[in-house]
Length: 78
Image (cartoon, rainbow, N blue to C red; front, side, top):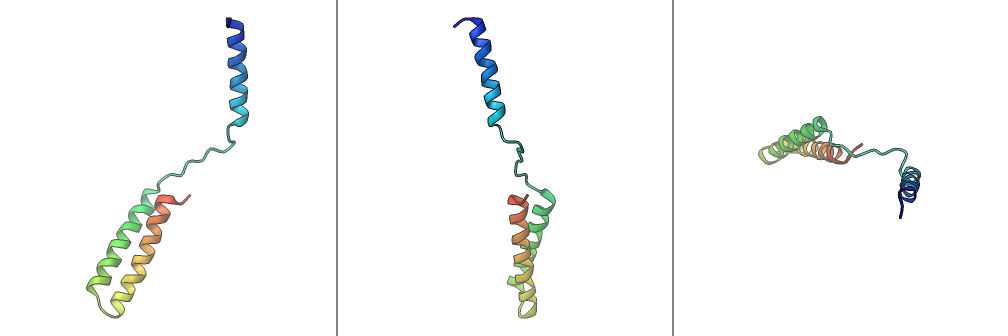
C-alpha cells in the first residue's frame, strides 16, 4: 500500500468514526454532595432505628430510607 492509499484510508476512517460517534456523550458522574449526605442520613437513620423505640425508631426508619435513596441517586443519578 502506498502513501496515498494510506492517507485516503485514514481520511475515510475518520469520516466513518465521526458519523458513527454519538452526538451527546454524557457520562454518569458521581455527585459527591448528594452521596455524602445520603450516607450520613442512612447511618444516622440506622443508629436511630437501632437505638430508639416507638416513634424514634419509626423516624429512624424514614431517615434511613431517605438516606438510602440519596445514596443511590448520588451513585447512579444524572
